[in-house]
Length: 112
Length: 116
Picture (cartoon, rainbow over the protein chains, first blue to last red):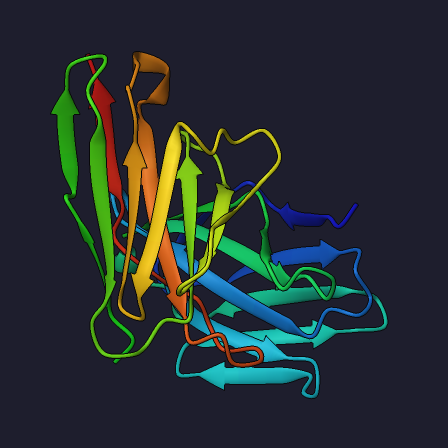
């Protein structure tokens, strides 16, 4: 079946450093890849998404890169701040069902 | 824009009662809404997909008679947990989308359900 693998499961960085989270997927026909940030006790918040017709998208300190050939995409957060601490989920929209398939999540801790 | 409101945010009730959770899209019309369940430190598990005016489609293993979903308008979907028991305690989250190709899903803030 369709699968999304997300790594690492936990990530601890010093404030100001960069953080990178990577996801690999199995459905080569997928063409929509969102990233969500979930703070404790809240619902996931869409922070950036990318469609397969582009290889990179940037929004201030956040960027996503997509390699369709290798079937992986990554979230890059630069100049991390303590408020970036949260759980981050990647997702892939299934080309068969249209549903989002989520990665396992990455707990990011930014130390001040 | 793209705000999804979920209510209540937290509910505690006795075993055997039914609980209704509302999910509203405040500034867009949601052709499709999704209901997820999330256990502590785990990812989101899709329970069902509902399209406005149609019966919900449930994922394998989800009891449709236990989790009743109604999507009667383009801005409101409800999930009713019937005859709730302690094992139904969880974090329930809805999301909504316009249904257009590759438009994002926007999530509510979830409902923490505790069954005593």
